[in-house]
Length: 520
Image (cartoon, one colour):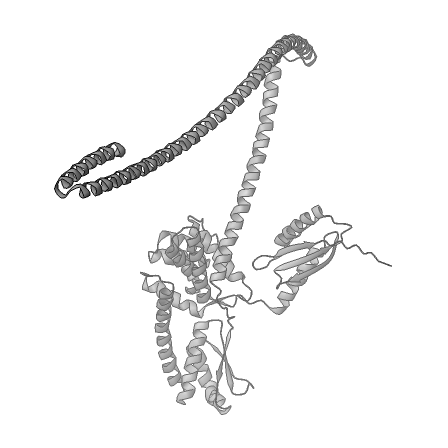
């Protein structure tokens, strides 16, 4: 298009230039016309050259564009040809697979027809055999009826009864196994709860004694305590109910009484009389009365502090006073208040583990031995006395039942009662919780070892952990592994039947086999 435009333009320019030349020639002259003609020729030549160059450039551009389009077209054709080739290969592979599957289906159909034919033959044979078995069974039943004298219905009934009986026995056995497994799991869980409770309430224990020692400045004070013809000491013993022992013990006077509260009154009174220096019957009665009043008030404060310590509230003032009296009571040498506080904590912890009311549990544990603080003139078990006392002061029914049933004097009505009983046993059975004479302790260990040694096959016995475990070494020739387990159970059962002991005793049977060789 550019060439078509340029060439006319060139022609027009040539005409224009020619006209100008002619015009100039006519004006200037012949010389000018000649020079103009030469210049026009040059211009025409330059224009032709330029037109030829432009033509060549445009032809080259057109050829390049055409070549690019050809390359792109060839690449696209090759790509499509490759796709067509791949599709042809896939179609060919599918056709081959279809042919194989078709051959496989034909083979399976052939096999199925053969199998169907075999099954029909087997069915025919089975029907024949079934009819033969039924015939034989009928003949056998007839013979059995003739031999046993029972009809088929009677025999069926007898068989059913036997099967029902066997099923019942199996069911009973299964139920027993389930119950034993449940008991074992429950025991493990209970032991876990109890152990956790014990670990969290590791309270210190102190063994209570029946005497108190009052220190004096010198032995001359002993004479003043005794008084003229013993009147001071008699007045003191009458006022306090405590035995005063004045012997050769240097600078000490001994007060003896099973009643800890009376002994405490006597100790404080005697210390005040010695500090005051005035010791005569009238002064003794005055001091003892004053000390008794002060200690009665201290009992109330002690009870209130214990209730605050356990985070309990709304307890009758008389029960608070009885709780304070526990401080001056003991059971088997174990301080009653410390024991009751520990039982309260143990019961509360175990109750929280199984989702019961911890406040009622601690209240029940604290009051479980409150019957021991009542006047000794009242007859009856301390659990029932505590039951009446808590009922009198309108405690919660669960607490009342737990107090009365912790020694099984009445029936337990709530799980908390069982927890109180368990906590009471735990607290009392701890090592060092209750006093045991040395002779009785040694005798108990000896009896434990002798009892275990009385079984056949036992070689040696060792009582360890203060009698809470017995190690039994057996003769490996006489006792095998199975019998060792039975032996441990038998020894434990015999210990339960024949011995009295706190807590529990672990029986460990040891069977050791040693083989020796020598390298020479």
